[in-house]
Image (tube, rainbow, N blue to C red; front, top):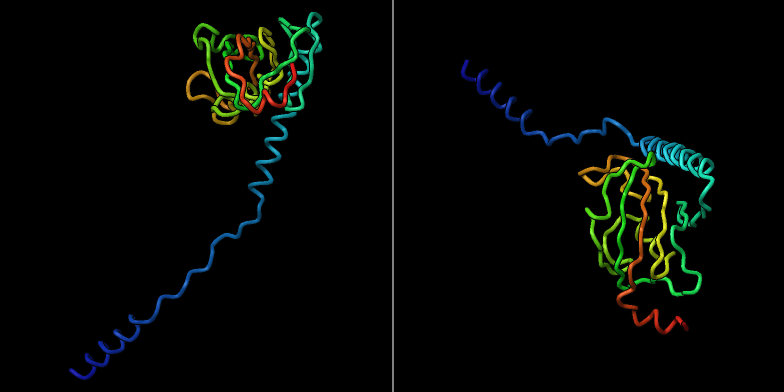
Length: 188
């Protein structure tokens, strides 16, 4: 009997000491999630652009311009005599507000206050960062941004929701400091 117990114990030890067998993947990646995400984003952008274009078509007062960055804008106050527009590393002083496409106020310019920032070097929403480079000192422009040029999928964790297109009126109060590279390349 002792022999049988020792034999079973030895057999048990042999079986339990086998090396672990690697697990096979349960699912294989097909890329379908990425394709679906891209398709959803394209559909969302198309819907937002269609809505923005309907706003533009119904506005008989303003002349809209289409930027190469994917948003539209019109001048509230334009300076046709100045030529310098902010470039990377320039320091500017601006004021802006943020509204929904239905023109409901999200943030007033008073809430935001005057902002001093270095162009292309600080973390503001993409539309503001590129839009400021279309402006001259003293100008005021109203921009219509699809959500991708606003706060995108994430929102701002406060008042701006997920995938929310925006209207923002930006005023370039002053160009406080012109970067040395801009001075060399600009002959005003």
